[in-house]
Length: 612
Image 1 (spheres, rainbow, N blue to C red):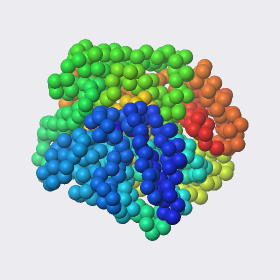
Image 2: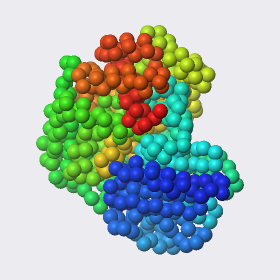
Image 3: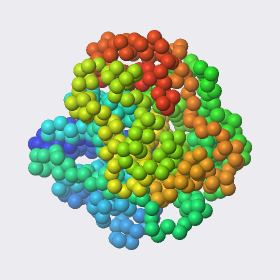
Image 4: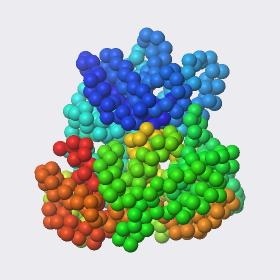
């Protein structure tokens, strides 16, 4: 099995053999994702490499790239993730005549592909990015899990496709367009750094969207792939559940969450929990305790106060740790340590992420990885079960223009015009590119198109679908993957279990919005965990020093934005940068993010990864 691993590769569509050296270069960048081993495979137009973190089948039989079959019948796979139902699938495939030489979930995918072709993805329960190569036909198949928990970045140039588990790996291999995608920049500056698939902030790199199977035929000289979306839950009411009471919905969601937590115990090593002290992670601890997990390792992090904001929530995590007798680890981070940690956190980012949680998770994962190799984490509950404040104003609205405007006012970091707007912030040349490629407001147009799709009954449903398919994937989910992978730690997210998400999409919005948001989950929590962690004010991983910029963090940001590299790049208006630097804490976004930090982080990321 791979765990939080790294995969990379190249396929050619001409007579040139794949560049094994370039693939090896990408694999070197991915080394932190897989500290337990590495492997390479190359033949003709295809080369693959893998970095392994051993979680299931710790023996050499689980090593990758994994080859199945002989000669022209060979299948080769590289895989990143975990298939939670691999035991059940192995039994089913064995009954169909397949023979296994390992206990790894990678081999289950290979045999499943032999049995079901690309339809194997419909049988997989878990998180995965996988690339399979049919040696005989030359076909290459890529697939990504339903909720985009595991990443896969792709770079296409004439005659060649490269792919990797991180964007910086592709940059390191060279020979790609590293200019800034203006529409992606518009999204980055509108949605606190979220850039929806398939775009990334670089023109020359795209990412495979979640719930997508892509097929390349290496013979025939064309790189044009075929994409198939294999999963799309309905955000409409199920007539079969029309008579369900609130308690029926609560019981169903609780059962689904119990199953999700239980599934994510599949490992040949112990599994711990990242415990923030909020409802979501506390419920995971409570349910694991009910599964018989005693002495569970739990981990919390806190920071120095800054600008009048408290920096830790230990009082809440202590309640849960005491209630369930966990082996609890509290990690306190002072301001100098935070400044020192920022370069590593930025280096760990596959794409630039401004969320204050990134450095928190990076520091947390560093310490957790010294104790344990697999953790469960509470990401996704707010998007799946309506925990954020911007869902409440959408109550009773249809998924139309009024809902788009209401969502935009609450969620967007800035508009196209006015003080602090896009036309004030970005340089004229960049603004011209934004308008030419994305229209007058590319980000609002994206939201309007997404919310206007069929399959969402109300404005709340449309917003939840948007946040689950887009905002969640490229903010919290990516944040957890990037920071855990940087320390060889596997993070599992039970709130993104495919069955739980499918069920939650059907829950009537009024039940989700009840009790100030996440009403269904809070009702479940009141049965299972101490109420003080339910009735507390909503919190995040607070990192005050990234909202209130001062001292070493402010120096880092100022130096990055006034550097020669930033001036040559010319993304932002010098007058706008000067105004923000002169008053670094005067402008916060509607979600209380620091506008200067957004700019500084992007420039720090570009410089860290050698993007010119």
